[in-house]
Length: 85
Image (cartoon, rainbow, N blue to C red; front, side, top):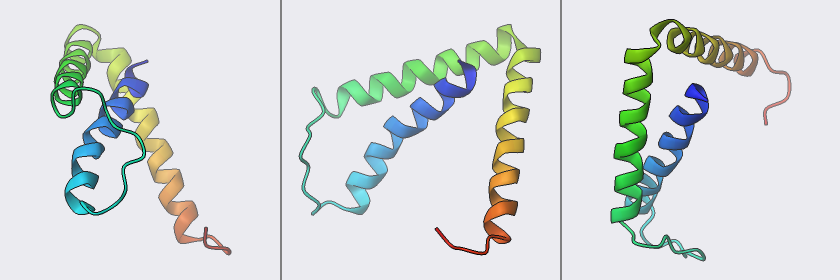
């Protein structure tokens, strides 16, 4: 859950970045209460992640290590891929 919470927070935070980078793109789905609801979600989720790091550092660091290993494998595989995706 710790790793999932990190990625869920990043996904919602990306909404702000993409709306700034691509303001002219159509928005077929509107977020209820934008921008307040996503801001509250990102803040609360960040607090949960920080609290988990504080309360369960061993499990949290293990989760971060697994995420790091996955990222490393991804980038090595991408560098040596025969077919670009």
